[in-house]
Amino acid sequence: MRRTITTAFLGATLALTVTSPALAAQSPSGSTWTAKSDWSLLVDNGRDMDQIVDGSTKTLLTGEAFQRKYGSYSRDGRRIVYSDQGTTGFGAQIWTMNADGSHRRQLTALDTEAVGPELSPDGKLIAFQTQGAIWVMKADGTGARKVSRDGYYYGTGISWAPDGTRFAVTRGTIDERSGEPYDIEVVSVRADGSREIALTRSGGDKNSPAWSPDGAAIVFSQALDGGNYDLWSMKADGSGLKQLTRTKDIGEQDTVWDPTGTAIAYAAWAQQTETAPRVMKAKADGTAAKSINAVGYPTSWR
Image (cartoon, rainbow, N blue to C red):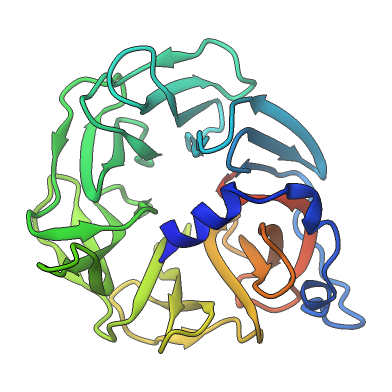
């Protein structure tokens, strides 16, 4: 599961990920594709929040190991909602700031950790997670309420549909003996928690669904039969399932779309030779993948 991989990453030495023949092999020989040059990507490296603009990296927030800095841009790119250690409440809480890192303000002060915030497309709502549950609140931090169903585990990685009426997330059944989730599927849920619909029914382990900007497709990470995590895509109704990556001994997850819907960024790591993921960029169909020389998990692209 995603949390297992994350734990291994946070305890790693980042300098070990500078080179990787396996990842370099993903870039097809002779490929001339390049993504749109005017872009800005947020990357959670397990300690800091980095902002990568046209290949240059700026650290927006600094922290310590195990203090995740998951950030999400507003649609206009002017502000970011993110998770960070709270000054009140328990552990990580939800914050907001300007896109340049200024004017930081804490939004939640819950008695449980709050992580993984995602702004709705109209900027009016924030969906976030607390210990396997999903919450939604107004963008100013008021009116927070749990919208997920009891008795299930909801995995990290929330993605709003472009029309803002629903979001995609993963949901697993909880084993009564071990407390661990199983049969993890991608589901879509209305913003008020109603009409939860399972989009996949294959079992196994899935995480980090990402809705395309045009609303037509969802990309997610899936591991079958204990194998590596690969990227898969499907139509928004769950049909048309297609495997995008098939890289031996390399895992991929945490996809984000570029605003045009023509490219994706994601985290990839060679399980036998690397202890931390590097950020990859590819066409929307998973081809022409290449490293952008950054370490961590991409969380938002504008």
